[in-house]
Image 1 (cartoon, rainbow, N blue to C red):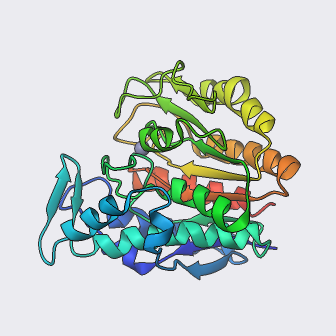
Image 2 (image 1 turned 180 degrees about the vertical axis):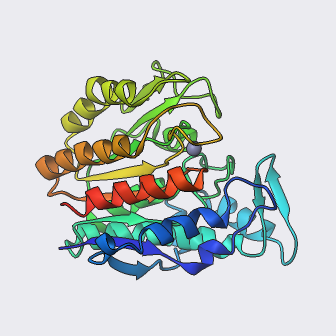
Image 3 (image 1 turned 45 degrees about the vertical axis):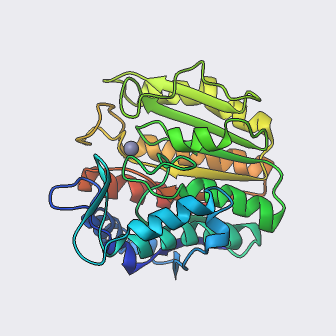
Length: 309
Ligand SMILES: [Zn+2]
């Protein structure tokens, strides 16, 4: 079985305006990195379009319809200070959510060993009814619900190593003991949530905040002492990764000092738990990462590790 890479060219048509850090070139850089010889054995597929039924498992129908109605025919429409729609946004959001469900289908049915979905817009800041922080639909939450509704997964563990806290994912699963959300992130930093004492109604939220300037050693300590044990003890049927690469030392939006090897290490640790607990089933979704070199090389290290399954 192979690692599956899911992308779609429509993700390049979503553009939030000149100078916006969450830009199409991010995906182009990742695609270029994954053209290298060592990625030849990747199985590649185009993301399918997500359906309204799949997305309203997480977001109310009225929210889905409001985002659809907000999409402009020309020009840009700003939903919050840093979240903007252009004519390509709507299809990109549907395919990002659809690609996440497709990856879950392929991994839950054993057709792929694991999968990486290189799509945008990202999703982990999107709350039940609020778009924010470059996000519209919460892709990882849609993936978790898809695994539960379609494939009978009872417990889904989400690990989010994006440098920003996934406030949306935390909010969506706050009172849901069937989904564990764990996150390492810089704090204080946007969006401001993610303190240690935010634990969810069923102790199903695990936050491991890091400080500006922290590097790989501190990140690995936090993973070992806080996150990994909890995921193991949760006995997940599937592990999802919110794979943001903006904790990289080169990233312009944050101040952690991770390098490619740290992302590869985290990937390896999560794969080991997946192997022990759920037949290796793991789906990773791209979130942030805004330095093209740091992003593409980290994503390549992440995918190369996934291919060792
Ligand atoms: Zn981020």
